Length: 496
Image 1 (cartoon, rainbow, N blue to C red):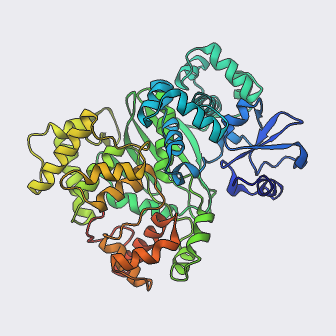
Image 2: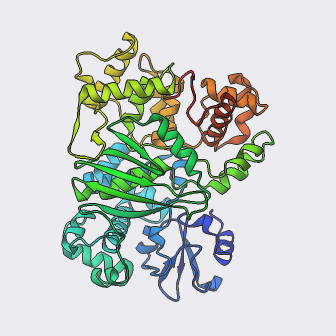
Image 3: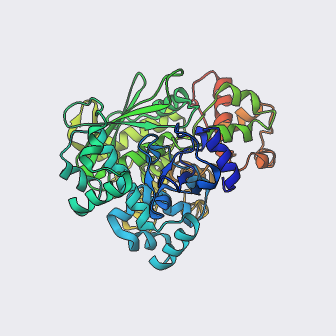
């Protein structure tokens, strides 16, 4: 939303759909808020709008203590934008600036640090460093208010280089010192050694469909589902970890509870970011459904399954390996193949967490295997792709652009358009990928009275842009219902 008058109308109506998509800065108070802040609505002449919290902070505003704008769901724009700014925001969210600095971020994106800085400032009103600083401040607030960790530990875990820098940033952003900020909140209960956090998601949120999708693909030892809790191991920049995500019921508030056990506290921010991407927590379901329901063939499915999400990824190479294992086989067969691969590599957690005992195999470990079970051609494709990821000649992460990633993948023997599109949809979070080569998706299209041939479906889907990935989830749902299954198809052309 770029129109200031439309933004102000959202503030007047306290429209929570726009939380995280922009912030409202009030010149008379020096505070910035969410659009849905419950405080008295400021007068229009006193209000400025910024696309990010970092931009408001760079302009000298402090975060509102009442609505906590830094804790709002993130903007869906970073997945909608297939450009450098969108890729940069996804990488900043994953902590690349903290680990590699602005030069590392610029190198990944193919620009000089100076040019990237100019581009980000022109588009978002804040430099990459300022955006990363705002992210560190948010992580600090989460740790201060949700844990009992010593303040010095929190400073370094949040990515600050010193306690003094941490104290100065917290005072500047929140107008309170760390101890005062902590005193206003009570931490969530969590077992010893774990962190318990709340992850807000935009409503409506079709948690049951997401759980069914993840359950059908869960690799024993790497993942586990118990009731409404999805658990899995995590391979993170500084070490390993586990997360247990408890998804809300149909009538509950749209909040996911995450309980994390991390080998290194510095991995908190990337772990949370990856979990949010897995949940597609920052999607705009209302806007998506308004766009898709304009097609009469999709209207019944949209109304029957509000808040349907496109499952994301906690690790890009893992999704590529799963996709390759799942080509031309059923979901159950793909799951079996992934389980065999995980146990063949046998990369165990240093400290098993209940039923969670293994990390999903790394590309380097897969490339080093003497044999890979399954058809010879598939095994060769998996080995070559894994070796390319391990040596850095193939990058599969949220910082890629869809067109570039798909081109890199399709250029490799044994990888076709379906696999490339599936990886882009889940790893980058591209909302506009339609996998017309998927048998179950085409069956769902037929069940909804849509063309089932790829050319006809592609033509009809032009009106669904830029949300064809979400339309595909509705078609998969229709196909599985027709087949009498859950969100886990029995047999597809390629549906890992």
